[in-house]
Amino acid sequence: MKKILMIALVSVIGFAANAQAKFEFKTETIDYGEISKGSDGVRSFEFTNVGDEPLVITDVKSSCGCTVPEKPDGPIAVGETGVIKVKYDTKRVGPIRKTITVYSNADEPVKALKIKGTILAEGQSVLEKTGE
Image (cartoon, rainbow, N blue to C red; front, top):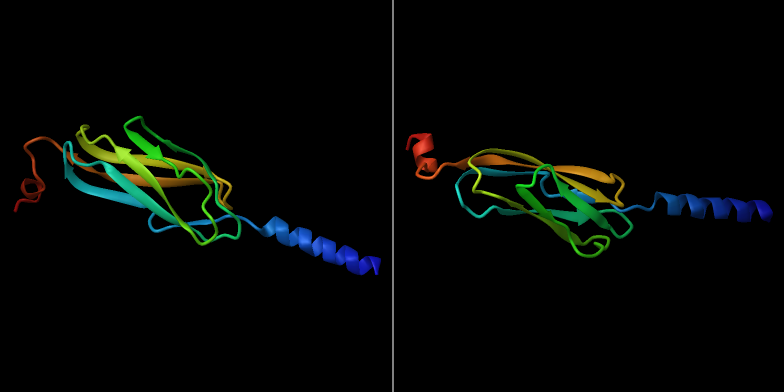
């Protein structure tokens, strides 16, 4: 009888140790494309908690002060979706290549997301750039 109880206890502990939050992003890279200087720089990374524990995002950091990320306020329940908002300063002309690092209790506790694109100078339009 003691052996059966011990096996059951070990099984329950082993199962609990495997329970973990896990996020699945719709996309891990946002491409702004070519946008005009001063355009709206806000974009969103949408994700779903596909794990079996609530997902808690503890911090979100950017590789540059020109990009301001915003994490969800509370835990994301199993099966629920959440959003990490990112605002890029579109007054800076030139290429965008930035990383947003997400820290959480997920099976992958540190996750890198990317934004890319090009901010065109004033007076330069996307149509001029492509020659149309």
